[in-house]
Length: 134
Figure 1 (cartoon, rainbow, N blue to C red):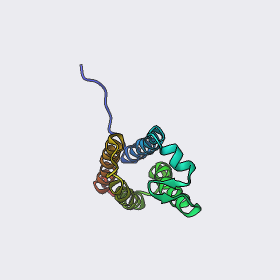
Figure 2 (cartoon, rainbow, N blue to C red; figure 1 turned 180 degrees about the vertical axis):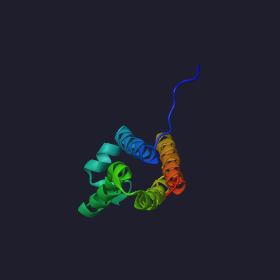
Figure 3 (cartoon, one colour; figure 1 turned 90 degrees about the horizontal axis):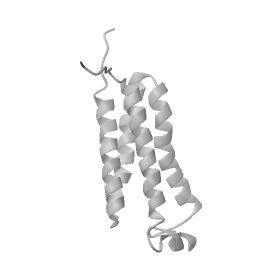
């Protein structure tokens, strides 16, 4: 006997990858609070060597809003637009993830590696979006 299987639509694959990415972002940030001295640094108004400001927080919020919105957009945008939005937003996110991979904490390096793989898969699936006969 063969197990029943079906082809998953590229929109569902992309949405699932974006959900996975958002969850790993959240867990990595949450686990960061377990690093000794991290909470004290935040209380003092610093984050990874940067002064915490409204502009910094807005930048982080915009950066983290994009993948959250991509879950919905991947399911609803027209295919041609969807493909390019996933590629562009995936590349933007990848640049920021790769920029943060120099963190000395091994769990951040692991999380960044997984995030990079997920983003490469998003870009790949969007790039290889299947065509249909007209």
